[in-house]
Image (cartoon, rainbow, N blue to C red; front, side):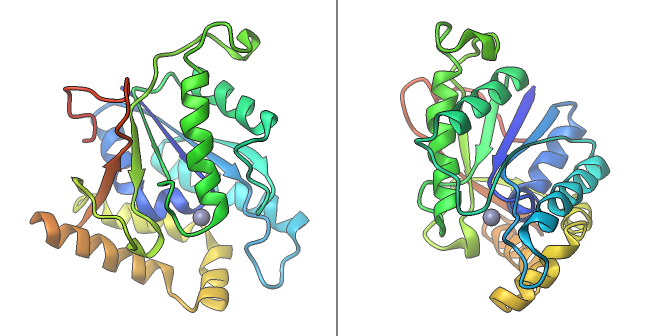
Length: 234
Ligand SMILES: [Zn+2]
């Protein structure tokens, strides 16, 4: 299968879905990760023009570790906008190129606007990508794609109904997260958290809910043409 994760910041995939994507890779799927924002505001000291390229490099290092293809739309932090035609069309091109069997992204009720706008962009662009006469120069149309929502930040208002056992992947997931060195500092200084510790703790919590050691949880976009009879998650 082809799996496409479309997340906002360069480290969101590691926090919420890396274990699942590592399992996808193990079963032979092609995994592409698209970061919409470049994360250029995510530091107290380093200025945005330096941080953006640094964060894209951190994401590539993490993706390379796992064998994922990484792409970025390189939108500045706080500027993700689901009504922006360029952002929408750039995402249509990514979806048509990846030809995903399913997409993993943020939930539309997540904690900050850029995450929410990414979710809306995915909803819109994943339908547009299926319409043959919509901007055909962006690539060949693909099927309307099932979408899975990752857990919200700090797991607020997001009871999952599908779980993925990531017990064998937890160490690699945290190694990948540790590639985002700038964010270990930012999240300590801005949010007062040790993100490696909290990520392990939340994975343990999801694991406890489904009877394994570590897990990641998901909800689905329930809408016409988004359903399937197959289990898509590993
Ligand atoms: Zn984020």
